[in-house]
Length: 336
Image 1 (cartoon, one colour):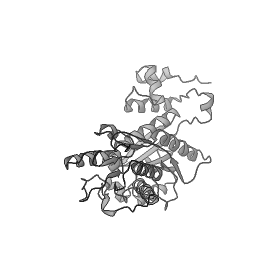
Image 2: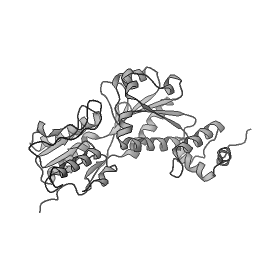
Image 3: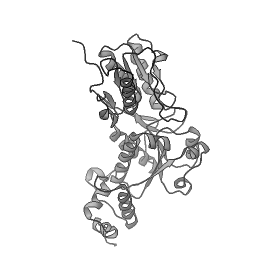
Image 4: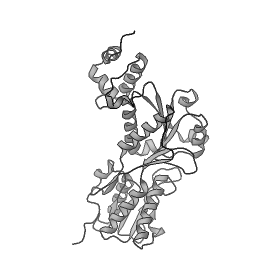
């Protein structure tokens, strides 16, 4: 019987410490992403089997490679997806899986040219992260690989998905503004750009409708162009009392635009974001927002994809992951 491969064997192979190997396999900070990839690849090549706790033994997966496809416009412009990818990488590494990231260029997306990781059968399953051309998704589906959509969905497609409960989040934020005395509320977001923005807008409309308020079209501001890239925000002639924004970065940009135009936030105009990522606290004042549970989204997505790869039962359709309201200083205080 061959000797069991140890972390020390991997460390000797790569010329690094056992501590670094441990961190790399566990997805912890302290090693670069490049070195983490080398550690995982070496462990896989040598046949390393991680020691599993009793609770983890039932779910440990070995020697599988997960491909992650993301459109360039999201990875280049939106730091949220870098965070989500990191969670996917950590959750996969903890289960002994390798992750290969492929950023899809606009040219390849429009032409439906698939990457080499698909055409050369280098992956066992796929996560498509963020909105991507529907014809491209259909082309990927023809490969027959198990796949799952992460942070978006399309009711016209057969694919399962994992995403934030965007409609509930949009409704919760709008209800919060209403509770703080705001009746004139606008929305910043290009609703045809992504399913997430559309659902946040539908939640916003639902809260207004329940309050007996009609959403005004002139208070809906576009934040992206037809290619999904952020654009300069154009303030309406008549200003509402508050805005719900499609994400924290857009809310940050709106606050800057309002300040340049002479408005005070939140005294003149309240602003709320969505995601609770870095722009929420970089903004002055700090943003009230809806925190997306990226940890849970990443864990659920990896678990569901691995069940599909291993031909075990899995949840069909969309899995919605709830977040929570985070209150900061960008909403005017309650009137006593």
